[in-house]
Length: 281
Image (cartoon, rainbow, N blue to C red; front, side, top):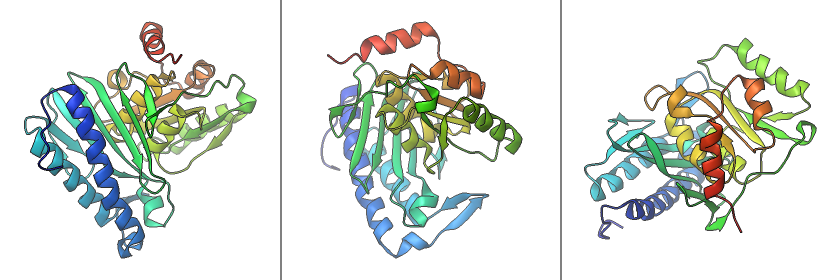
C-alpha cells in the first residue's frame, strides 16, 4: 500500500480508506488474539485504553499522511488538527469489549470535506464485516447494498442506546423510560460506531446517544443516511471538536425516537434528498 499512488480525488480517498481500514483491522485482530487483549488502562470512568488503540491510530495516521499529507487528521487517542479536509478516526471503538475478549468492536474512519462527511467506513475485523458509504452512492456491507429496517411499530422495535458520563444519569434514564413506555426493546452492546452500522444494515431499528464524539459517529451517520434512514444534524447541533447528541433510525420510527430522546432530526428536505439518492432498484 505504501507504494501505491492515490490521485488527489474523492474516489482515490475512498479507495485508500478501504485499504487502510482493512490493514488496520489486521493489526487490531492480532492484538485481540494476542496477549495484549487482557492488558488495559483507564482514561476515565468506563473509558478503556489498550496498546492496540494507540498502535491502530498510528498505523492509520501514517498511511493517510503518506498519501495525502495536506489532509488533516483528528483521532481519538492523539487528537490532531481540523482543516477543510480532515480524516476523523476511532482506531478501536468498543475497547471494553475488545479488552474482555468480546468480538464486538470496530475501527471507524470518516473523511470530512468543507464541513460535510463524504466517506465513511466501519470495520469489525473479528467478523470480517466492512461497512462503507460515499455520499450519494448508497451504503454497503462487504460490497453488497444495505438498507435500514422497515419497522413501523415500537412494540416490534429494538433500539440501542449508548451511555455517556457527560450526561446526567437521570436524563439518560428518562429517555430509556420513554422508549420502554412506547413498547421498545432497549439494548446496549458497547460500540456506538458499530451500533450505527447495524442501524444502516437493518439489524437495529435505531440508535441514540445523548453525547457522542465525532470519531465515534460520523462514519455511522453517513452509513445510515445512505441506507435510507433518518439521522440528526450532528454537525449543526454538535461539533467535530466537542461532539454532541446522536440519533439514527429507520424512517418509520424516526419521529417517535426523536420525541423520546429530544434530539432533532435533519430537515425533511435533507432527508428527502438522501432517500432519493439511496433508493435501490
